[in-house]
Image (cartoon, rainbow, N blue to C red; front, side, top):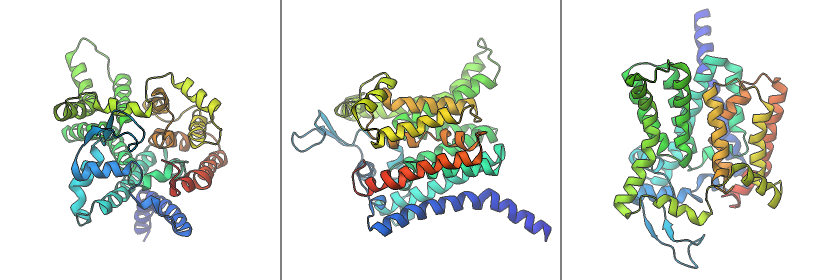
Length: 373
């Protein structure tokens, strides 16, 4: 009997806790949508339509039509979005009777559950159950956390990130190396900032291996970890070159969104000066920025908090704060920074509650009323 109880307790901590958090996460936002009779969280809204069109028909680039396409610009179509998520939906849709709309949502929930599970397994093994649990709750109740339940690629990216970390720190051998290469490539083909996840193996390899710069094997092994993150954009842009005769087509597409290189702190300051502090972009910037200030010193590995800093600065460095709340959602190490912090539990819970308040009182109501892109 004691053995049975011990096994059950182990299963509870390893699998049931993260899955229970994820189911409660779904229930919170599905219930909110049902009570308000508004179902945007289940629909192909905003950019999800572009991912859907890529999945169904591939990439399309055409001149913008004045007065019809918004925002106005030179290049319109769907070439501004990355292909890995729509390709995954395309090839896994038979699991959902071949219906693209069901495939997007079904795979979102599948990858979301796997992401929560893998993240919990890693954090629980390294730091204990409480830290792992708080980290996942911080993610679920973050101001933009509900985007993990939409047809955007964020749940898929979360799974890839969690799987990459799980392989990097827990496995060895040729299969692990192949898995890391493929997963890294998929990450870099999933989102513009996906290339920055290469910071994890870069810092890890540089800090934890003998730096024998004269040994060719050192550079070969380093390239093995870093190459997939560089290959993703190169593959996509090469495809655009051969199909549309424009290697930098994606950058040209983004010009109409006023994305040009800028000093990130100036972009943030300008947003605070020119707009109300209560805008979703400013509230997001402040909530995530406070994590860096309030939960120092960071208990996560150095490669994780360095990645978090890069992801925090990347979108403002493009000169725009547009949709910042979605872009910051994928700063996945930041939630572990909260969970692993030496701050008192009550302090962590109050900060997480603040994020939940922003999500439920401001962000999600705006989203289901089609006011949050």
